[in-house]
Image 1: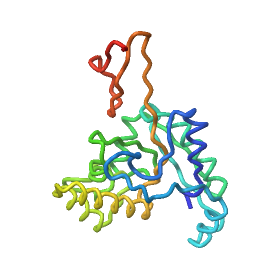
Image 2: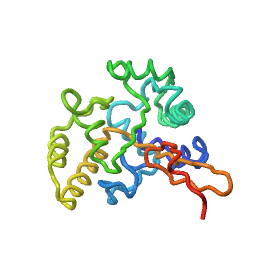
Image 3: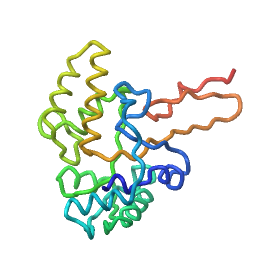
Image 4: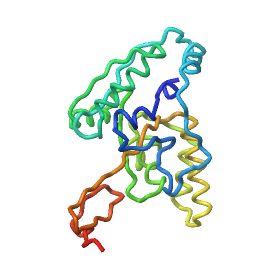
Length: 222
């Protein structure tokens, strides 16, 4: 219900002024492990209200949506927009923002129930994302699993992918795992930000997947 109430296209166009693309899974298209079979979820207010009623909340409920205000791109504007969207289905949402140094500690201590986070895969594939944010927290993996999602089948698939060297087999494992995580609503993906660089005439810049700005990536324009 919470996911169906979110209009991701509005978050792209209004909140991020077009400098983003909507997300329907945890990695963008062309990343290894992206599952092309997962369809974008369209906002459906009537269905969201029906699901809330079926869950025993016909009049909705209250929650607090948290985020940092000095790290995530357009974080404060995003949570304000989501709060309004959730309000349309009866979810009375209070927004609380704080410096990331405070926010990070509170998420690690499991003090927050609903929160906005960002995560990037520096390897260009889904496995690094899974290891960090959906593997069961505690132990070697799951260090950034803020929501404490836990699915033994997902954990087993991640472990198998880590030791699978055949690309086709590993891609299938990652795509299937992505489908499970999205179906479980472990995380509600919102957008992928578009990184923009500007150069003066006579120079060209090669964009970095890490979003880093490196002098050695600048070269004379042909």
